[in-house]
Image (cartoon, rainbow, N blue to C red; front, side):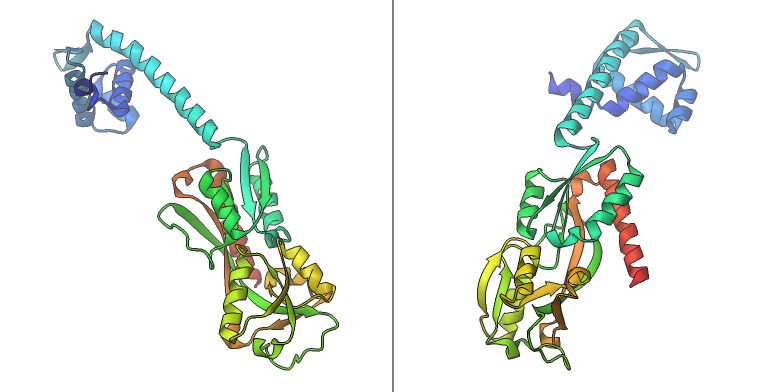
Length: 310
C-alpha cells in the first residue's frame, strides 16, 4: 500500500463519504452526522485529493457522484465491514465485551464484598458469567498485568501501583486488629501494645499478601522480630491456627463477623494502627469495556452503601 496515498485517508472520511452517497446531498449528510456542511464538504474534498482522481462533479449548487465514486463506495463498504469484524475478533481475543468476566480477589473479601458484588452484577448483566480466582495481592497484580484476569479486588495500601495504566476504584478502608486464641489471657483495658507480646508466638500470611506487609511494618515499629511459628497462603488457614491456639496474628476487621466468637480481637495501640484500602483495579485501556463498566458501577454502589451503613 502506498503510504503517500493513504497517509491522510481515514475511516472518518470514508464514513462521511458513505453517508453522503446514501443521503444524496451535503445538507442531509451534515444533519445525519451532526456536523456542519463545511465539515462534510471539506471531508469529501480531501478524500478526493487522497484518492487522486475525480469523485464528484458540481451541477449548480449540488455535488453529484461520478462513476468512480460509486466504485469506491463498494470497496468502502467492504473495508468497513472487514474492519468491524476485525475489531470484534480482536476484542473477543482480548476477552473484552464477552459474556465472561475473570475477577481476582483476596481470600478475605469472599466473606462479604465479593458475594455482594456478584449478586449485583447478576442483576445488571444476567447473561454474564464470572470466573473467580483467589490469591495474594502480589499474585493477583501479576495476573492482571499478564492479561489472565480482567479485574482484581486487592488492598492498594501496600502496593506500588502504576496509576498511569491502572484504574483504581476504592471500596472501603479496613482497620487491622491483634487476634489471639480464645484461651489467651489478655489485658483488654487498653489497646494492644505489641511490645507486651514479645514472648508470644505468631502465625502469619506468606510474603505477597496484603496483611503480611502491615504485619512486618507493625513489628518494625514495635522494635522486635516476632517468633513466627508458620506462614500460610490464605487467611482462613491462618485464623484456624489462631483458633487452635498455635499463635497470635494481625487480622483485618472484615474477618470479625466470622471469628469474633472464637478469636479474641484487640484494637492496636496508636503507634501500630493501620488501615488497608480495598479497591477494584483494572487496566485503564479497558475502561470502556461494558463488563468492567458494570463492575465499576456496582463497586461504587457497594462503597456508597457501606459508608451509609457505617
